[in-house]
Length: 312
Image (cartoon, rainbow, N blue to C red; front, side, top):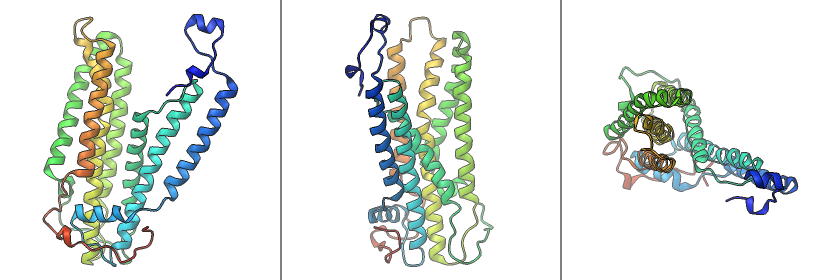
């Protein structure tokens, strides 16, 4: 959506092909948008979590939610949901407000996704530090790793996407040097490595946090939350790879003969890469089977928590 049709041009700007915004109009749009953003942020932080969220989590993770572990499950899921909403709204707000200052109003779905992604990572980091029960926590003699909580299929998909990104980055280096865009290549590679490091550190924190006391119900809930968190992080990594992968593919095209790679092809490949990676990441994070499938409980027999606090 653009405001250009509501904006006048002066003679010089018209001759140069640029639009000059009416300051009063821009100020009004900016004020309305800022107010809407504040309302959305408040809603993202204060909106209650629905019962369906807990039910879906319990069924997917094959967890019996009872009075002993219900409070912890609800607190963790509410924290995660709050930060995801906050990240999504923040991404939308930043992109929209920046676009208004440029004389247009756009909805940037990439910025919204990146905000959601950042919110999800922050949420999993904070959720890993939530207290579980009242007794002392303990370390376990059983070796734990990503494979303990994430299925083989999800790990294979993650490895394939990361491997493809690394391969494209290597070819992109050659193309970037050939076209004089080595600086752009370095920015995307460094940004990708920083995001990957943040995900890896967060995943390590989730895997290695001490377990709760020997209460079987809390232990089951703790394992279920770890499996959920790490699967979501894997999905986030796959989805987020679509952004640098599309840009690096454009840089890699520098090895092709001149004229073989047009701007339209670049935009199309970038959009397709992002859509495929986001769809695959969503499947892993939200729809793939849990490593606990066939384990602790029959999902059809999962009862609702006995009025845990914070659940609408």
